[in-house]
Image (tube, rainbow, N blue to C red):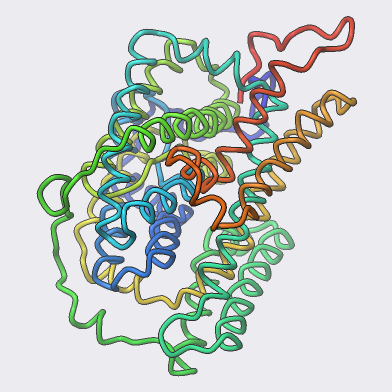
Length: 457
């Protein structure tokens, strides 16, 4: 997207540096937490790796803690903007590819965390040296940013369906799995439609709570079908500590995996920069180059912390910009409160066990709808791009490349070098790389200048 030239049309009740009462901060912070789907990414990974319910709960717990710490790092120190952090969907494919390559299961995640830490340090260096804002403006103009977001939605949809709906879990049949996925998807769509239909407090509540409604309804149906077990939740302790890198699981370092995640981080940074500019538009506060570089430092620190406590890379969540526009409150105190709430949830073992107990098809049906909304967000960005023959190739070739990575025969992929295996395991990365390369190498029509310096995703 382009750097915002118009501001949010609504009137802010509280600007970023304004103070609100502690009770208001906690209440509004909880509302931001409810709007974030922090638990979806670790649940997808846990389902695909067939982790035990205890290991899945541990990963979910670490993800909440990482999201909270990342939010505090960006809001209170680095970006100093009302920005909430949560797990990114972009690295999903690469995470699974590296984990399976290292033997799968929870042990395979040691190779993932070992590769994530060096990449995060590179992101910190880019920001600290003042290079990040130059790199991101050069590589990710609007046409590339829109294409990346479109590819993310299209590429994650097969994961949602294959790993969570068509793969049978426990004693569930395929028909039961499809039925549960259909219920959660239908509930999510219904809640979203009602939220759009009623422009009042009920409508806003339906929109903010749509994911929770879908998960709660799908889980209730699963319980009625005898497919939901309460016992693991009852057995889980109320308070537990997260698992730490090098203490609770061994780290493994692989150069191909590290190089793969360096590329992944570039795509994640393009995603999170788009969120920063969305927030900038809502609060009518332009982002400076210095803020971009400080944000990169914060992103790298957040991702380093996430890897050390057993979570995946975090990114800025654009849904929270929507919550700001609804409430009119952009105070950083609210986001500090949200970060504290997320971090506290990371120590509640019973809460994480409850999320881990949700049947996988319920998550899959909801996630499939989320993938479509992500893809449509990319299309909305591309609407503002002149779609000539050159643009057709910049957008089209990455889509082809991402589907190639998704559909490539697994037996053939396993004959390739490790790094190519990891890259092909992440259709998002393949598509994003193709978009950046195509935009750089394709000749422009006469009079069509290079992207302006104020254009960025």
